[in-house]
Every structure is written in C-alpha cells, then in structure tokens.
Amino acid sequence: MSSRSIISTPAETPEFVELDLRNNSCPICNNVLRDCVQLPCGHKTCESCIDQLFNNSISEGTCPVNDEDCFAFSRIDVVPDYGTRREILKSKVYCPYKTNGCATTIEWQKLQNHKESCEHKPRECPNRNDGCQETLSFKDLTDHITNHCLYSLVSCPDCQTPVMRKDLQNHQDDCTRYLITCKFHCDVGELPREEMKVHENSCPKKLAKCPYASAGCAFEGKENEINEHEKSALVYHLSLNQDYAKNMEQQNFNIQQEMQNKTHSGSNQQQEYREVINSGDECNIPVNN
Image (cartoon, rainbow, N blue to C red):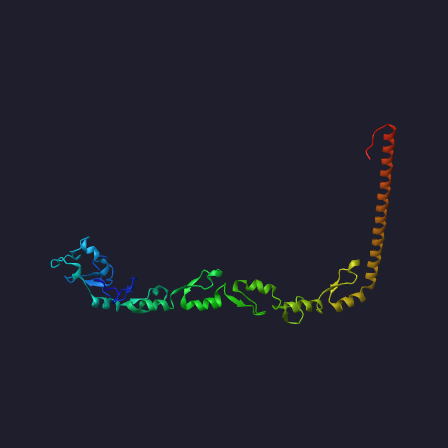
C-alpha cells in the first residue's frame, strides 16, 4: 500500500489552534496523525508506524489500542484515511514565528508557503560576510540595513565617497570636503577642510609673531595689532637688538677662544708625540710607524 503521493502530511509538527489531539493522535508514536491510515477495527495510526504493528510478522498485525473488539489483520486490510488527512491538514495552526510577533493562523496545508514569506521569519543580515552578526525579522531587515547596520555602505555627505557606516566618523576626520570652522574664530563660516587650510594661512585673525621675536620679543597678535606694536615698542625693540648684538659678539668671541684652545692643545700633543719618538730613538726602542 502506498498513499504518500495523495494528501501528504507535512514533515514539521505545528502548534494547532483547536485540533483535538486526543482523537487525532497516533496510539503508537503519540504525535498528530501523519498520512493517516485506518485499521480494520476502526482505529487510526500514522502510515509510517504500521510496521511496528506486525512485530516482524508479514501476515498478521495487531491493533495498538487492543480494545475488546479489535482483531488481527493483514497489511492489505490497512487503508488510507483521506477524510482524516483532509480534516487535519485543514486544521488551523499558528505560525512558528508567533514568538517573533506573527499573529497569523492558517491551515496546516498552507503553512509552508506562509513561512517562506512571513515578515517575522528570522533573516541573517546580508552584510554577514563583512562582519554583521545580527539576525532580525524580515520586516525589520530593511530598516536595519538602511539606518543601523554598521557594515552597510553609506555615502559621505561631504565628498560622496562610499564607506561602511562604522568607518564614517574616521573618514570624516580626514575628509577634505568635510565642513569645518576657522580655528582663529573669524566670521568666514564653514568651509571644506581643504579650503580652510588655504584660508587659515591668510586669515586676518591669525596670530603672528613680532618681527623682533628672534631678538626676544614675545608679543603675538593680529596683523593690525603687530603694526601698532611695532610703532609703540621702538625703544624696547632697539634695546632688544642691542642686547642681541652683544650676545652674538660674546658667542663669536667664545667660539674663537674655543678654536684657539683646540689649536693650542693640538700643537702641544704633536710636540709631546715628537719628544716620545726622539726618546725612543735614543734608547733604541723600536717604534711602530
């Protein structure tokens, strides 16, 4: 007997909404009847459980319920119970993704198609190969990819370069088109980083050193402040220049003295060397050249 091609029962075991499993369970496996068959005595079992009724006997089987009116039978007496199969397959079941939020109840025979398209079905993020380990309901996947996934490609809002969301901040720290304000707090507003560098070189609020900084003046200010400072500090700058000139003269003198001392020291060393050689000749001491 073979009836698997006709009204076949799905492989999974769903959660039924109302089906009375006391009357629709197999007395052998105790699960819902699959590919239900009927024994001659009227009891029902799963088709796949029939072999267990014969106890390796080819000719005679016994009913697992073993009521008083049950009797022995042969395999040919076991027939498909299409009515029960239809009833079970049309019974409402819950979507297996109920715990994820799906409230759908559907006929068991239509469950597989529903599962494939259920918006609550868990899906791996398509960026898994790039590092994302998130698993989400299908309905949340688009929002995750578009707005939250750290491994999704996004365009830099300033230069339009595609980068992973997790790398966007680091990219913007170096992006030449990223808008920044002048570090001298002028009123130029925001400019792309590459343009701001040019601006800051000539920014009117950029602080400059006094032209006499090398002489010791520590004043810093804006261009107009430097001009006013030069006018008001003439005597001070003259004094700095004089002190600077004296320091330079002293440094030059010290350098000359040091050079003379080295020259004199070298001459003394050469004289001592010659005296040692002459002394060795007088004593017949061999001297290595």
